Length: 244
Image 1 (tube, helix red, strand yellow):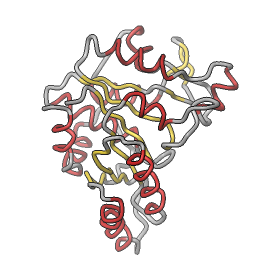
Image 2 (cartoon, one colour):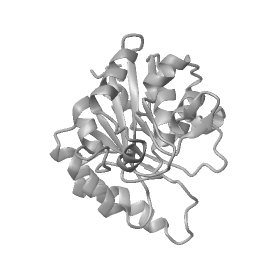
Image 3 (tube, one colour):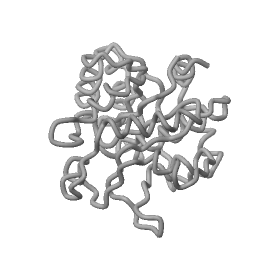
Image 4 (cartoon, one colour):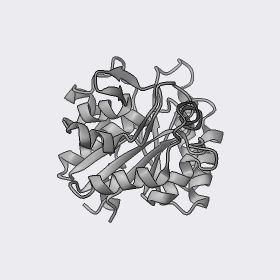
């Protein structure tokens, strides 16, 4: 049984935010009091309350959660203005992300909630400061991991290297979710059909689902998330790990 889940990706724009938000919504619909955490957000959105973490805002809207400002700060402890790697954003702000602070924020959230769904930034080996990477954060938290990957040409190498890194680190990799972040290119269907099978075989890993492309994604549109649940048959594996 785990009180946390970590959503990581093969790289930037692999679909982590959509998968994290969808899993969070499904967990809450199953009665799990789970809340989102975006430990590090770059490219923050200016607002009257300071920089907003757009990925966190999307997950909150999807799950219908309206936290107060103190709790929201725990959910997004590090938000930077420039859209770049966390280590570079931290260097420019003269305030690097600290793994201990992220863990402390999560533990405070868990005093009032049953579980957290943590969304990483970029890929697994993205630097957070001068010595630590996203993988180090995952090892610190020790939560089961869901890897989000693209479906099309080029994904085999990126995904298998990511799978290997997670497995070598001793983390519990529940499986891979493939996410279409853009419409399929005509004629590539045979590639997209084979890639998940090849990755499952060579990575010795489960394929949890294949999320269809969702144009004009609206976080509040329940029809979108009904399709998401259909595309994620491996959600049962996630529920099992979360102890439900």
